[in-house]
Image (cartoon, rainbow, N blue to C red):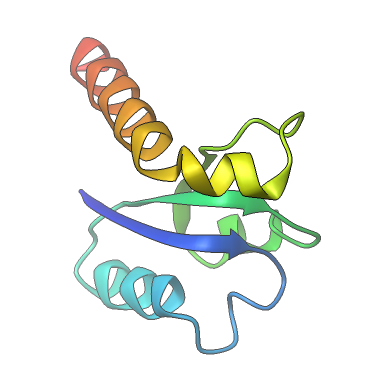
Length: 91
């Protein structure tokens, strides 16, 4: 399992952003990829077809960008912990 992250994942992610490179490399080895992002944008659903197992938004959409950025590390940590716990339960 590989975790990767990007500030915003959208239809542009497939055109050279690091998470796409990570996903393609992992897919060649049959390794699933979960991406965390600050925000999901238009066209994000296309990324599942390209190999992402999950794409998890860490920010609360009701908050402004400044607040989201200030809480980014805390929110990422929380979402990663929640994801790991869920995956362990699914095993």
